[in-house]
Image (cartoon, rainbow, N blue to C red; front, side, top):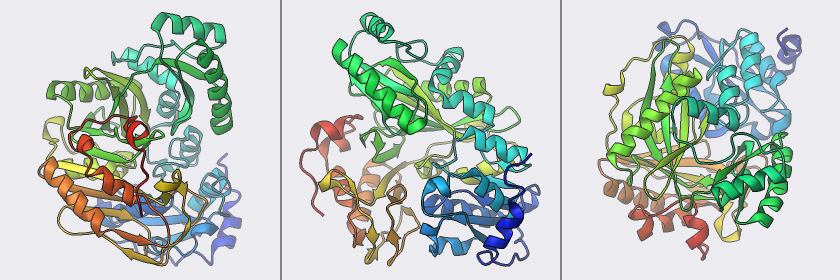
Length: 485
């Protein structure tokens, strides 16, 4: 039985005051996507706004859900209907499947777009949606389960002949087994949680003592964060670059890549800057890493949009890390260099349409760079900076795109991710893109809270970064002086 169906009538009564009267659906591209008259956006903030805008251009009605913390946010007014799904805590609202399904019943939708984060990679949620005859705009729950578990994903990569970092064949069951593997492949070794993400459940071991300690710490953190204490081992690649490949696949056997993004500049395993194309990747390696990503998703039976992530060593050898089975935060970078709207393609694929282009038609034109603007204080160990935005001046001009849901007077709460916007530039050359980004960051003014803008201004005048001589550990190794606001 569909969870939440019995609660739908109660939800209608509870939220009738929040829901606008449904009007006639606008005409347009929905004539070709007759399956979807209305889509529920199961997310918040800038990605919710991004999906709402795509649906509007396609002539599809939208239902926006929101927690009490997001009540009154301006982007909600752009949806055709809005439904409150609970209190501020994400566990009681954006992560509560029964409330999402109830809102979908209230809104009479045919599909749900999960955005990124929250329930976007929750295989159970995808299965529940489809059991309720609501299309989940993403991969099947079977593919998500196979690729969501890192050990299972590594086996798929082996089957697809995609290079893997040397390490354990599966989960490590004991200290003795871990020490035996370490003796075989040599230190340093990375201990990783099989259900991990965002740097949680990860430790680097440099000798037997740190291996024993790291195993315990990684397992405890993984159990607390993901309810799964399983860990595995990989050879630690020193000073790696992080390169990911955007893929997209339909239900008609077509799987394509939309080229790559370099996301090497990170702090605490969180990306700060993303760019396409990867400036330091030789063309032959670039072609091979993109082909490897396509082989992998075909082997997994994957459909819809996704990202295959790799690390690249100092000799430009690449190794598969994981698949993000959803739209990425940095998807605008790929959209700008290819001219392909990924959110619209997600919706069309979910509706059963074949991809409208072939691999040879997908060109990578110019250079696109994205930076994440977070409500954090870089001078205070990146502590979150909730509060009211008292003054806001947004950048613009040729080559500039800003994806944000905030406005002057908007209050950043303490409940969710600190991302307040994504600044993206696109120019014919990397040099022009850097100049455009520096200009845009200088224009960007946010008062009332601390942000990462000062740090980003310093990054874009850094000689090593400009020359492409950075890796995933660069910030931790070299950034000693906190930027001034």
